[in-house]
Length: 202
Ligand code: URA
Image (cartoon, rainbow, N blue to C red; front, side):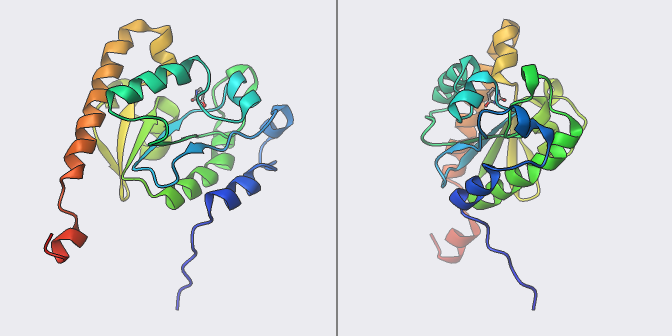
């Protein structure tokens, strides 16, 4: 008989990750930024990597991009308490440089475990790094944003990174439109007949 491994609880996983030394980023971190939010969330949001404020506070998206993200969540009818937020990398890259392929490889087993544990209905990928990693694609966010995709059993909805839209205001209209679409997708799924409901005749 094949043994089925139960997912670790988020607390157990966070404790493991807090002492991680799988890549050299541990040397420059103040603390690991594991993830935050509702462990039963329907929506999991995946960003890129902690910045300076996140590294200091130990929580994702607490700086300027986080403030903008909170506003955007409101457009979709969501609050931070409704969602779970994590990043591709759990430690801050020096000077906020792009994640390196070897860092992504070392760190993403944690994200996979978080995703398995939370088991969201929908994963929102913010920006190129999380979109390319989760969809296993080389197609960039400029082409993919706002178009629902599938990755295994998960629905995925790619959106520009809020920091990109802070620097390039021409992206803000698209961001806001995509968050309205996200709200509509969630409302649509609310009324969907799931196989369980069908079986029960609901
Ligand atoms: N940008 C990200 O991708 N993640 C954070 O946590 C903060 C800024």
